[in-house]
Image (cartoon, rainbow, N blue to C red):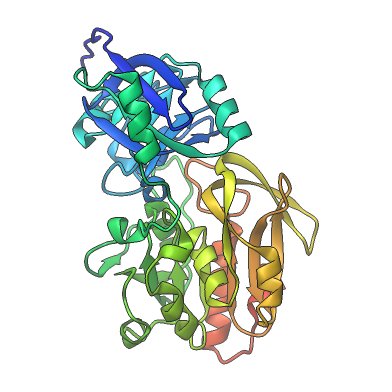
Length: 401
C-alpha cells in the first residue's frame, strides 16, 4: 500500500458562539454542519466514524494521534460513515498496522465527510465542557473560508433537540443477521461454542452497531433486524422470543411512534435496550428524557451497579439521559439499577415484575472496554427463562439473580 503525502490545505471550524479554529483539511472537500461533541476514547476511531449514533454531529477526538492504524473492512460498525465532520489534533497519513487496507484521509474522502487537523483540541474541548454543546460548521472547501459567514451559518444550523435522526439512519427493510465475532487468525484464539437452544430475536434498528449483533449471535440468538417504524403487530408476527432495542442518534423524545410500539411489545415479550434503546424504554414506561450539557462520549465512563456497588468502566455515546425523577413518578414498578459516577445520571433501569431491562452504556463496545459484556448472557437467560414459562423480572436479571 503506497502513501503519498498531500500538501496541507486550509480548513475552518466555526462555532455558533463566534469561536473559529483554523487548521488544515483532510477527507472530503466540502462544508458540513452539526452539533460539536468530543470523544475521550484512546482507540477505535473507525468504530466511532461508522457508529450511526453520531449522525448530526461533528466529533472531536481528545486523544492526539489519529489515523496511525489506518482503516480496514472488519472494524466498521455499519455500512458507512455517519458523522458530519471529524476533528483531530494530529493526523497520521501513513498508517502502521498489519490489518490496514486504507488511510483515514481516503476513508473520509470516499465517504464525503470533511476533517480538520492541527487545531488546539484541548481548547475546543474545554469550551464545549464549560459552555455546553453547540452547533458548528466545518469547512474544507476553499471557496467557503469566510469566518464570519461560517459563524452565521453555525448559528442557523439545527441542533439535535426535536430532530428524529433515527428516521435517517434506520434500515429500509428487515433483514436477517448471522455473523458472529471476527474469528481472528486460525488457531490463535479459542472459540466458544454458541449455546443452544437457539432463540428468535427481533432487533429494532434505531442505528444499530454491528458488534451488538455479533454479541447477540454469540449468545445463541437468530436475529431479524427491523426498521424503527415497524409496528408492534408486525414485530410480533415474526414470532420472536424477545425484543432488542438498539442504540441510535439524536433526541429520543423526537423519534416518531416508537415509544407507543415499545409500550405494546413490553406487555408481551422480554426486552433489552442499549443507549437510545434504553431511553426509548424509559419513555415507554412513562418517564421523560433530558438533554445533557455536553453528553457522554468515550470509553472511560464509570457506571456503578447499585445492587452490588461494583463499578464498570464503560463506553458511552449519548447526549440525552432518562430523567430519574420522572421515572420514579411514572407509576410503573421500575427501578434504577445503574448510575454514572461522574454526574449521577441514569445508566440502567429494570422492571420489578416484567422481563424488561436496559443500560445507557455500550456493553458490546468495540474495541472496548468489555467490563459489561456479561449483559448479553443475562439477556439470553431472561429470554430462555421466560420462554420456559418462568415469571422472571428484568430487575432479577439486571442484578444477576
